[in-house]
Amino acid sequence: MKEILNFTVNGDPVSVAVEPNRMLLDVLREQLELTGAKEGCGMGECGACTVIVNGRNVNSCIMPALEAEGAEIVTVEGLLGEDGRLSTLQQAFIDKGGVQCGFCTPGMVLSAKALLDENPNPTEDEVRRGLAGNICRCTGYTQIVDAVLTAAKKGQEG
Amino acid sequence: MNNYIYLRPATLEEALELLERHGADAVPVAGGTDVFVKAKRRKVAPKVIVSLRRLGDLRYIRAEEGRVLVGGLTTLRDLEQSGIVADRLPALADATRNMASVQIRNVATMSGNIANAAPSADTAPPLLVSGAEVRLISKRGERTVPMVDFYAGSGKTVLERGELIREFVIPVGRSPYSQAYWKHSRRKAMDLAMVSVAVHLELEDDMETCRLIRIAHGVAAPTPIRTPEAEAQLVGKKIDAETLKDLGETSCGETLCRDSLRGQAWYRQEIIKVMVRRMALLALERARAKTGQR
Image (tube, rainbow over all chains, first blue to last red; front, top):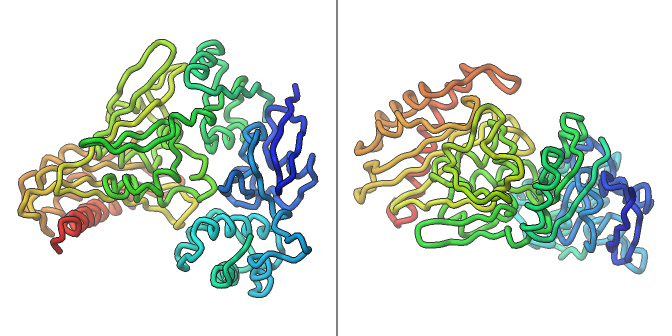
């Protein structure tokens, strides 16, 4: 039996009816059409489904949707500025070649954002540790780490 | 994944009541990082999930005289970032730093790690070498179980139906002391331990004689274990290459390593012999650094 779920996504309040066994990822993608978050493994191991919930990056594929009640959620779609410009972090990913196929990118960018929000000046080691839950099959990570360090230097906003 | 009823009690009392009411159908879930993976793989099919996530009162890390209290809903990330844990329980700090990923640690709890009862649980050896106790609670009452008695067999704990982990009571060593934990795995993150070693070391004031040592291993037996023979062997002895070599050999001799998916028994044994020595040395170095002596 469906239950009504209320939370905010990227600053906007939403109200959706969900089955109790739905995971947040499915609700975001299928009911809210926020398809940035991806299903890679469905088991909380690859990080492609990463979103930020109340300031913390989490795997939405194993987060029951009902746990999002009253929460503030940020998805990759929420990083775009009001003026339509990419955030400093997103731009750094592009400038440094941190995006190839793009499948890991939404999750990767959000994990990077969560990292920088908490630690604005990380060392390379801290960046690698912070992104350890996001797998990338294409880049070999070097450009991604570069992008995050660059964004940190520029004082990333979002 | 099967359909289930999902309940979100706001208090511990409510949660215990729901667990009692739904009996065998109920599964208590905190972070869910083990349960939902199992459910998706159809290894479990819960009928009623009692979510513990709203029980914020159970999320705390408190330093008291001679011990640290950790609430049952404390996340691995809380432990990883805690100054109290870093200072007083270095083995637990080592362990939580290297578990899974930030995303998992943000929601996963030490309770879940212990209750899930995998022999590879990274928080188990640190809790064992600290001599921790687990406070359990259900509608029927409360009880305290020492960590050494908490595992009933491979994948099994003494947790009874309707029972929750309310708190961990973790004694702090008597100075000068320190600890260290090593997780042996192929990857630096997002991997299970193939074998693991925790050491808790207390020194005499000469800073080189062992007053007390506790050693625990993961994935070296059906459950996480201590190795009391090796522990007794080092008491009162100077810590040097010779005594450490014996320590590693004896400790290894008390394990029941076997071949498995992640590694073979002979390899696990070799690693144990070396890492017992190294973790004892690391604990020694840390203890010396703390007192300012190098």
